[in-house]
Image 1 (cartoon, rainbow, N blue to C red):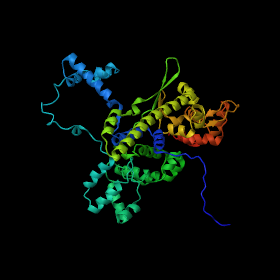
Image 2: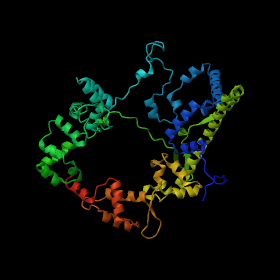
Image 3: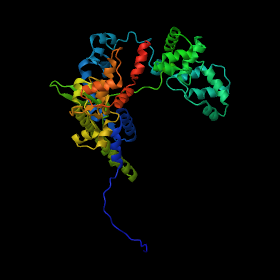
Image 4: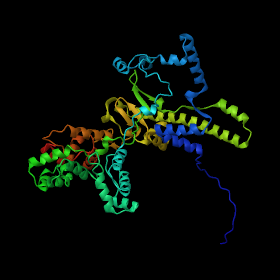
Length: 491
């Protein structure tokens, strides 16, 4: 059969991901911190975008208020703003908090300094204290250790491999290959760095960290070295085997374990590491006066931007070149789309959160034990959205209520069948019941996994023993045998 080129017309459907649609999807799955950074970048790139509080109407209102204040008090706006007490700034504070903050007017300049001009005063950066992190602390000691230039380079490379707890996580052979040095020389420098403060820093594992601290206390004898080599037996409560391995009696072993527990397994934890971002809730849940749950967005985490139509109209009239006109048109389209996307994102989060609260009202009223099984498909069907949209909305979004702050994904749990054929139980609620049973068990009656299965079956929960063991391990609760050993040895 001969192959002949020809033209054909075919009709079909395809989803085209425009840049605007991609941006809307991206905004939906960003956390509030990431969203703030994204909006800040857009404000810098797009001259037509501005914050809502910086609009012309807001500025006009602020200037009008300042003029009225000047007219009534006979002072300048700057002087009037200074004559404010802490009680005026924070009317919701209690009397004790006001007393601690100092409720005196802010215009009391009697103790403000020596009368120098503002140019002569130190800058604010001079009065700020900066936490020294562990790496800087060790670098300072490395500089003063009297090492050769080569050793200082090796020491700096070792310090770069530190984690937040103070452990050196790098491989000495790889570091030696990277620097073109011998591994013995790297190990020698590591031994010097392990003598730095705090004691135990630069260790490669927990036994080595504890050994450094014991060595400083002159308590690293052969029996203690054997104990450090068998820390897994101590963790599991195998005291008889641990006693035989160390070659000591019961009393000596108890004293050695007490010494180990007095040490610091995380020597670097006392130093400031990377700043930890505080979780800011996206949604607040409150109990209304009529007994229903009120869902409201956290306005502090929602960026408010708008397009400056007046500036756009003014600039577009003066634009002559086609490049300038195209740039303004593109900026206007992006600004308009961003404003709409932010509004749609807020509405979608609120919609999903309301449905979650409606489905899990038992949790907010009575606690974790009343969580219901819930999946993305159920919520998506209830609010007429796609499952992928609900998944993006619940990622990195948090809900604050009287019981604490929870990620929205926390409320989506698997179901465990009921023994009597009734309503299924949430996996999180069952995990909570297992934790409660073990926490309230009696020392003379330690609950095995089989016994927990029997108790849960009596409560109407159909669950297998391996599931109980899996939930117990996820809660980091040791087995019944290990719990018995710890009780027997007073651990």
